[in-house]
Length: 454
Image (cartoon, rainbow, N blue to C red; front, side):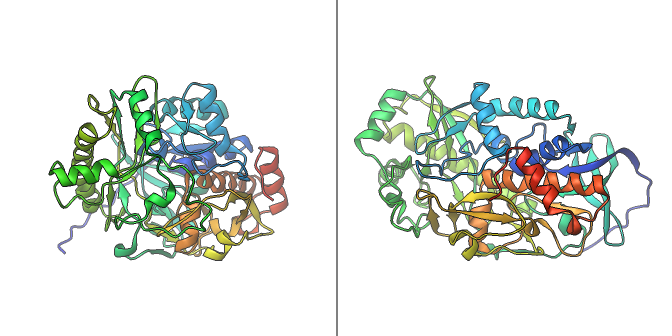
């Protein structure tokens, strides 16, 4: 590959802070709020024009769609996202669980309010592109924006990019699932103009269950059996009819999936119907191809729904997510890497920074938390090897494939984010290395903030 040599240049330091959070998805937003509430000067860096990541930018509105009558759920900032959205008119009941689906558009404002209230310094429209290192000590991050190249210095940095971008570029060991085994990416979309009554009548006349996910290649799943008879807002039959009628091209056999909610105004939201395999979310050419292919498949899915799903005859596209939904890229090699046994068998850890119910969704496994089982999340899984002053939060914490299928979920990302934010704040305040931080103090502050750790 031909290369060029960039000239050396000086970069303005635009801010210095105690805690810098890079990325504002459920993990990063929770981390920034937790750090600020723990007393740290906190900056939240986001490459796009709104906070919320997977919620607001991808359009994944089902924050807690796993929740059932006997679920022992996490507590803390993730639950606050849901409750605050409900209070601000930015959520409505979710059809398959005891939860509320967030309104992705309105949640942009909810996140703004939370950030302002906590005293977090917002930095939208800036992308973290390079670490600032002294040896193996991370001192901050270089950003790129319309203002050019700038630097933010921080006593502690939290990588909440989802892809471990900062950890990877700082030299921390990471790994990726082989491309052919990665969970599929999705283009999320919503529709408007749906006749709610006719749509729901059709759903009630032919209710789908999680057992109906079986087959069709993309949807082969392993369950414990207790999930099989539960209602699922699943759509496949209209697409099979469309294929038979020639409305869908014969190559689009993988279109199937779930809908999130239907409003009185006729919005059918959080349509998770397009699954794109073989996409590496750290490769921009992959992202380009998948965005374009996914939007085309979504428009074909809408045409199929208009033809073969009652209530959708006069519907149309309302919006696509701002960006592709990516489930699976880099993960750090952490001080402790979680295992499938941890999330399946209710692991307990002395350094727990939160809990999450026994909910596993990915790599052909679907286990819903209907029996009160839950596992602890260890602080050590947030600590990358080889780089000081850095924590990670969200789906890139350390673990194997099956543990990733649990901890990647948005509510769990908020749990690890809150833990990372509190630990970073206490580490900075006490001038103690992140791997030596007083876990008693961290856990006490998490409890003060309403988290559940045991």
